[in-house]
Amino acid sequence: MDFFLKNLRETLSAINKLIENNIYIVNTKRVRRCNNIKSSNRSKINFIWRSLAFLEENEILELNGKTSPKTYKIVPENVIDIEQFIKKVDDQR
Picture 1: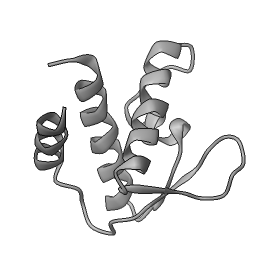
Picture 2: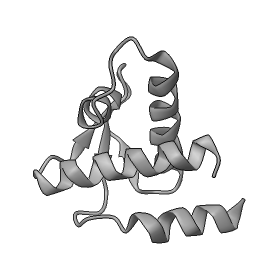
Picture 3: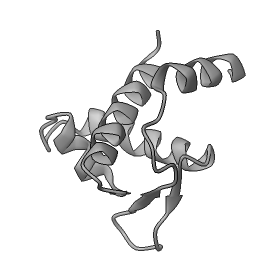
Picture 4: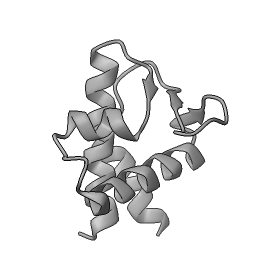
């Protein structure tokens, strides 16, 4: 498994945690806090924001304004099936 799919899976699990807590606005910082990633780990943070941009392209997230830091609104209001989504992404590659 490559790094992108692994980090995409972690990002999706963090988004599912936010959905379970009735939080529908997500940004890099919230995902980082859900996954207990330190702010000094820039490599992991870069993977998170790339994953968020990828999820926006696949219509899981939608951009909430154009300010920095980018915040996204979670489109589906129920929990995302991670395995099915990863399989779909892997088949497209």
